[in-house]
Length: 296
Picture 1 (cartoon, rainbow, N blue to C red):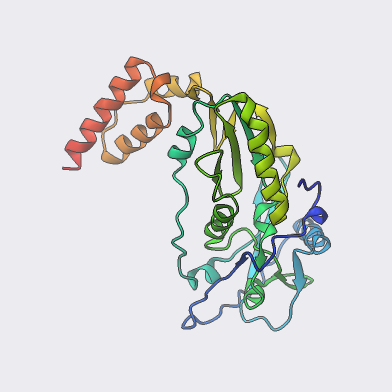
Picture 2 (tube, rainbow, N blue to C red):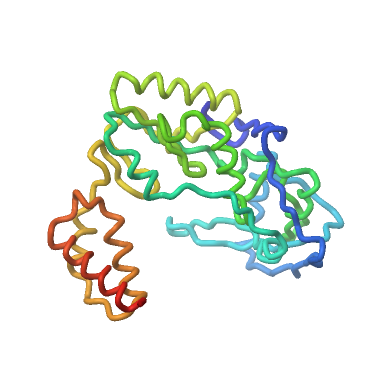
């Protein structure tokens, strides 16, 4: 059920789900010209490629009609880099998958009133879904030493989130809204009564094993009264507003445009009304009234 490395991930059975691109046949394939990188960055890229090959996520490919470049994106940790693929051209040729993603505000609200919560996160979640055989070559990218394509669904592809959400909705269709809430690869198991939590977890674990989905143990927390879910601190009482968030709202300058009003209103709404003092509620009401007047 847990993956400690990429080698522990067998992948979701492609008969259950796989990622398809549905490239518009009217779109002409694009072969991006290879970008040049400084020697130290070439070393970073090749080290990442070696990891992907060892994990079985990519394979060498020849004569691909679609060809993209890799890009290096700085991580928050100083001196660390993330190797990504520039799928801009490929994504333009793919239609949008309109499969709905859950509303984050509703998911977060549904966590209130539970005595125990467990937070789970998939291990390299997107990479647990296989690419459809007809579309693998379209994910090809070029580096200094050769060309490769993805065997699994990579980050950066259009509709990847929709594909993953479709999978988790299928796996946890009987649990979502009752004992679980799921947003792409973030999962939460909840229980209004402490005594029910073990049973709810066991049910979720059984489904994870059945579908061969692996969790990242370093990003899982089990049987707690509060924790972070989708960027919010959730508790039995609901969302806990951080004092700095409330202070930031109170210190905001008076908005003068519709865009500023909408921005400030959104930030204020993100806080649980039960945790906002009367002054913040008054400011929020004023923002909303002004927005209505300006937007006619």
